[in-house]
Length: 415
Image (cartoon, rainbow, N blue to C red; front, side, top):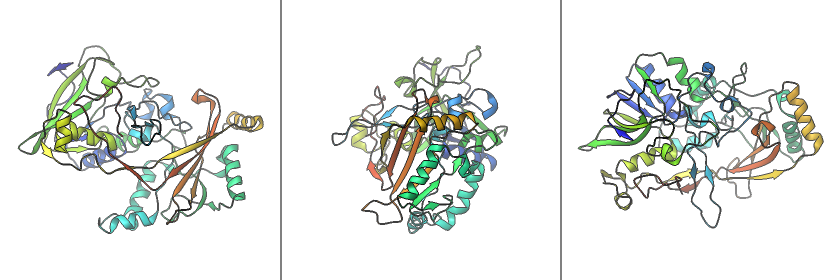
């Protein structure tokens, strides 16, 4: 790695947004539209608009969930005797909206009204018009029943026989127990997965006050006198050779390339960008890790990792909450597979996730506490047809990412 070499990045910026996922893309777009000078940094590649010809087909295909591609490679630490689990987070412009399931579900009214008790502006009445605007931007719609695969038709029939009522519209804040056709962020004309970058960044890419830099990893924020002075980043060395900002879609980035700099994928250089305003939108794992590497966090934890404490703030990286899920896998009868293949041959869109169930466990105290996801993975995933039904627990499980070394380990392991 080379320090201080020439890069395509500016030496200073008015406001820097770190991370071009669903949060960062929206923040950068809104601020740029308001006339602010914005530099948006993304650790993964920026493939441009959907028609650029640079996007890997698997990231555009809404029938797949290619979560193992363009992944940060996070692995959970073993807990209570359970095996390690992959924690899929996207390293590409658009963030996880570019590789996860195309399911656009709002949540329940009671959650937002509870938030609003101590956080005015977060009530269901406050967020509903914003959700509708997001749905418009992301081209969210509910597919017609005849557009479902034979598998998902069978799911709805089986759910009805089991006593689950049909929910006609999940695009609301009042869903109850039952099964529904899942709202999807898919362009109905091109049948492309419509991610946050397409929805928010592409319409304003030509603004002179917005600059987007892909393949640029933020190491840390720099501080002086308790105030931010800039960012240290790792990016590509400027050369005269033509360069396409891309990571091979089927090969995860190396631990060093996805961590703090290496020669892989092009020569890397460390650079400093001066700014007084940074917005971290690098994800649930990425944002606290940037702060910790910057010396902002619990002093004893930083000291153990060999990091000088700039601000003793024990809450950094704490109170992470996630929704565990488990899947039950099945084999299908030959006639089921034949029906699915006939559906594809007739021009049908074989989405993996077409239906969503809202269920109640024996301990449920609200309208529902389980999401059920019946999935039929089609052959283009490379492993033949696979069928499973996953149950996701809506009661969050708490954890805390931590840092044990100045450099990321061979495989980052937020517990």
